[in-house]
Length: 369
Ligand SMILES: NC(=O)C1=CN([C@@H]2O[C@H](COP(=O)(O)OP(=O)(O)OC[C@H]3O[C@@H](n4cnc5c(N)ncnc54)[C@H](O)[C@@H]3O)[C@@H](O)[C@H]2O)C=CC1
Ligand SMILES: O=C(O)CCC(=O)C(=O)O
Image 1 (cartoon, rainbow, N blue to C red):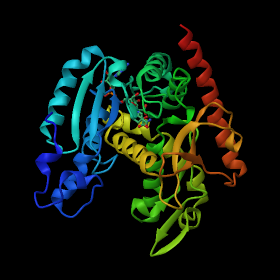
Image 2 (image 1 turned 45 degrees about the horizontal axis):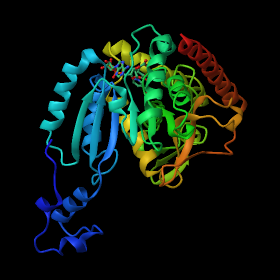
Image 3 (image 1 turned 30 degrees about the horizontal axis):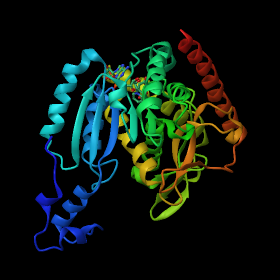
Image 4 (image 1 turned 90 degrees about the vertical axis):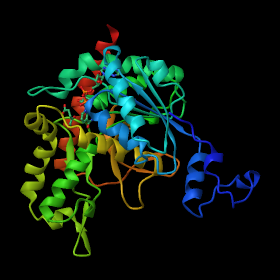
C-alpha cells in the first residue's frame, strides 16, 4: 500500500510547512492535508477471512468508525488454513483505493495481529448452526479467547479497546479480560448492539416511524436467548412529538411477549432463513458500537454494551453483562444509574445473569484443560 506524504498534497499557495503544525480546513486540499497529518491508528480484526469481517473491514477502512480524517492501519488475523483467502481480502482492500487506509497486515499470529493495537474487534470464532444455542460453542471458542487475551496482554497498547463478537460473546469477553491482566477490565466489552438495533427497528416498525426516531432501547444481560430487551425507558418521536415507547405502542402484551421473544430469537431466525448467521447487520452493529465508544454518545441517549459488571442493578460482579451506558469524549463509559426496574424486568434480568454465571463456570473449567 503506497504511503502518502504531506508534501504530495500540500497547497502550494498555503503557508510553509513549519506554519502548518495546527491543521486547518480551507478547501479540499486542506482536508487531505488534515488526513495525512494524523497518525494512523492500529485496528485489529480477527476472523478477518470470515463473512462478518468482509463487510466490517471495508467500513473501518473507509472511515465509518473512526472518522473521515483518521487514517488506519488494518491488522487482519485469522487461522493458518485461511491465509490464502485472507490474501484475497487484502488485495480487495487495496483495490478499493481508500485514502484512509495505510498498512494492511494479514497474519495467523496473534502477537503480530495485536502488536501495539489501539482497537481489537474479536470476531473470529466458530459460528453456530441451525438448532444450536450459542453456549453450545463455548468449549470450542472460549480457548481462542484465552490465547487472544494472553497475546493482547503481551503486545497490545494498555489503552486498547476490545469488543468481542465471536459467540458466546459475553463469556468469551470475560475470559479474554481474565487472561489480559495488565489491561484494565473496563477496556473489554461484548457486542449487544445488534440486539439493540433489532429492538429499535422493531419498535420503529410497530409505531410507523424511521428507526432513528426511537431512542434508548436497552438490552440487559447475555447476547443469547435469555437477554432482556427492554423498552420501558425508551422514547419515540412521532409527528414532532416525543413520547415514551410504551405510550406510543399501547400494547403491553406485545411489549412483554412478542417483542421480547422476537428480539431474543432473531439470530436463530436469520440462521434458519439464510443457512448462515447474521453478517451484514452484525458488521453494522460493530461499527455502531466502536464508533460510539470512540466518539461518545449524544447528549440524552445511551447505548447497550456488555461490560464488566460492577454490581449495578444487583447483577453479580465480574460478569460481562449488557447494560445501558453513556460514553464521554475520552472513550470512558458509565453504566446508566437509577432506572426503575419493575418486577417483570427484575425477573428477566436475573434469568440472564444466572445463565452468564453458568457459562462463566463452564468457561473457566474449559480453560483449565
Ligand atoms: N455478538 C453478536 O451480535 C454476533 C456474533 N456473531 C458471531 O461472530 C462469529 C463470527 O461469525 P462469522 O464471521 O459469520 O463466521 P465465519 O465462519 O464466516 O468467520 C469466522 C472466521 O473466524 C476465523 N477463526 C476461527 N478461529 C480463529 C482464531 N483462533 N483466530 C482468528 N480467526 C479465527 C475462521 O477461520 C473464519 O475465517 C461467530 O462466532 C458468530 O456466532 C455473529 C453475529 C452477531
Ligand atoms: O446467532 C448466532 O449464533 C450467530 C449470530 C448472532 O449472534 C446473531 O445474529 O445475533
